[in-house]
Image (tube, rainbow, N blue to C red; front, side, top):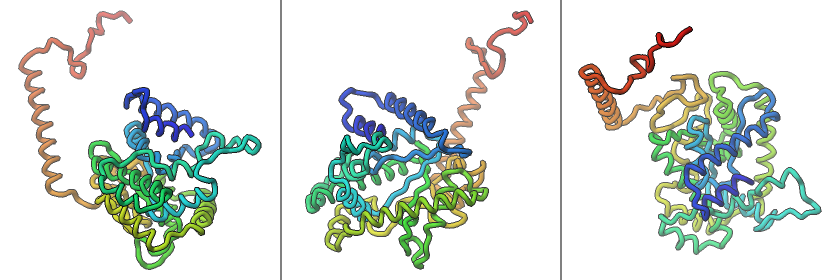
Length: 350
């Protein structure tokens, strides 16, 4: 629940908390959460923390990325229509507002915010998309709320990917359809990609791309995914959208010109295969799941990018040469800690 609470505070910052303070808060809370579950991870040293729902993504993802820039990040997304169907299933099961009765209170759920809230109620309005309100007005309130939350979560992903050379955001981008056994997505031949997609995700999370995963880990993950798949199918079974509803939803999504509708995939989506790779525009360094130099992209950068990097490198070399020449021609009044001691060690007795 603390993630949803923090996202709400960021959305409505009445206490004028600074961005730096939010970063400190989320760093401390994430470390405490990891410490809390450390004993239950067994011999594994990797702890996977997930955001509670798509509504929290626009508020929390930039903060988490900046604070934990060297950690592995996973971005899993689904199609907008599938997200609406699942959200409607949650609303039907729990109601639009979820509260536990005191007589039936379960301790495991006390500290959790149900996804019927965090997956269906938008926290970050897309004010820059002026055409969106008119298209959302053609949907009922439940559909419109889920669609806006979905668009906002994808919007922040695309925004961060557009600045990946500055923020180093190179996540493993996974389409949920690959995991949910929806045939024909990505390869078009109707084959089942779920087990391979799950294996790829586990390899990235555990940093074991270069070595085989233990069989017991794969089996446990497959069993867990099977249960979640059944829950998902049960949730959407009686909430299937008709063709007219899908058309209206896609019109809303289409107002965001950077998001592709239908069964298209987002930028840098990792295709399920044995030799997978992060399809970042440029990797500034090897991903955390690889050894240094392993997994580098085969695709070359545009010539303009290369020229820009060469210019930056030449400028840095020129500056270093100037600094070196200045240090050689004139004696600075400051101590150069790299060239000599900041104190005379002979003045101290042994």
